Length: 123
Image (cartoon, rainbow, N blue to C red):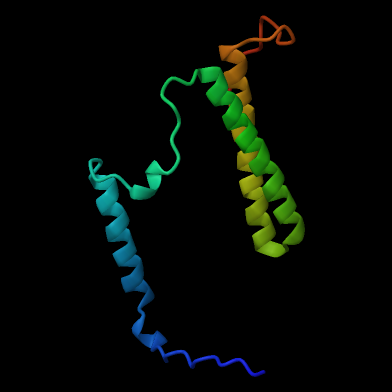
């Protein structure tokens, strides 16, 4: 049995100016950013309860960054060239974020394993 597939309408790709599309997108995004009372409908899909304590928030942030690290590392293994470099850069940012969140978590809720006096970090 032959499957009938309708012909797609012809579109004039020359009429789609990338500069105009970019400017239209920038105007739409900027309008949302300038008006905080006009909430983005997507932002209300996920919410965090206001009474969640800081150690719990930091623990979940650390887990999320750890998962991002694993995902980007796996992705980088499948890529080559500049795309691989981009994935590894994202992975490195995830690791740095995870380290920062872990240090914040240690500062909020020190464990017995953490030494009482830590050397000063210099940047």
